[in-house]
Image 1 (spheres, rainbow, N blue to C red):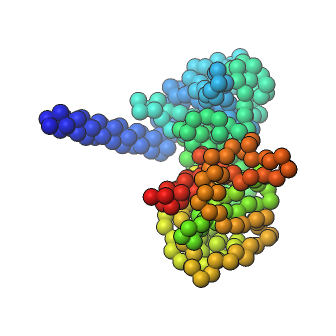
Image 2 (cartoon, protein in one colour):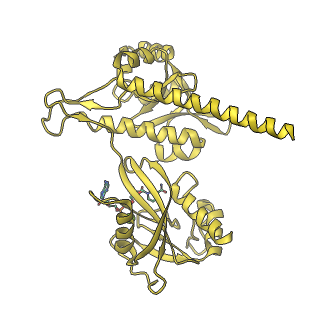
Image 3 (cartoon, rainbow, N blue to C red):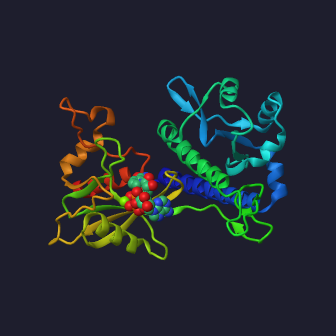
Length: 338
Ligand SMILES: NC(=O)c1ccc[n+]([C@@H]2O[C@H](COP(=O)([O-])OP(=O)(O)OC[C@H]3O[C@@H](n4cnc5c(N)ncnc54)[C@H](O)[C@@H]3O)[C@@H](O)[C@H]2O)c1
Ligand SMILES: [Mg+2]
């Protein structure tokens, strides 16, 4: 019995310790965002993730893709070797820190150094984010997605939209200021609601014409200005498939970097029993239909590569586990089978 209590005590102690590590880390990051001189100093002891034209730098080691972190000294060496000034470090943005408070920065070297030159020097390659996200581990993929989103935001917010004057980033890159108008700009995400509609025993999945062949996913749509999440969900389901949502419950959320920084808010929805006929909006969708449990379970197991049949048709497959749509579909299967 005593051993059980000891184990519980150890778990509780561990929780408290990790909790306080987390709190300290968040407070340190917040300080770096607010204090330019502290952040500038942190750049000299931090590590750097490299991008080129928004493509992250990856290195393949055996069968694994890793994202190398360069030390500040290594960054300095490379910039000097290729006759670039250290000023480039100023363009980096803060993307996190380790539990030991080693800050992590992301830096896009397009404009400073040729892509192939860095690739040869560091023995890796700049990889399109659409591929990179799916070959690295889960933690690395969310780090790459948010780092790229922040770099993209800075790249497209160089000028004040009111005065047309250049904006200046703070050292951490958590904001940009127009000194002519005094306006401060903060990085933005567009909220999108993704809804897995069910009638109780089937779920509704759809395709847009631009999707890879055979891929189906849950319905989704950008929030209109002024809308609550519930209103967006009801409107999108009505607009895209002509059904009325009866009840809605939240599942989880995810940052999604395509086409640029969306906050995906994932929900399950039940539609009214009497009214299950889909009336698809063919301007937005190519196909929308009900899927039974068995077909969904098979689709979850299917790899895109194995979806093509001999007759040229494609069997249904669903987004990979990195996409929140996958989680919604998985949860629905669990609800049906529990
Ligand atoms: N991670 C996932 O699991 C997952 C699954 C499905 C969709 N998504 C993402 O959700 C996003 C939205 O889905 P959708 O295409 O169904 O949306 P949607 O049904 O709202 O239609 C897209 C259209 O909305 C308009 N629009 C309105 N506000 C916009 C904004 N802020 N940015 C861009 N376009 C805007 C544009 O005309 C665009 O063509 C897509 O970018 C997609 O990548 C992610
Ligand atoms: Mg949509």
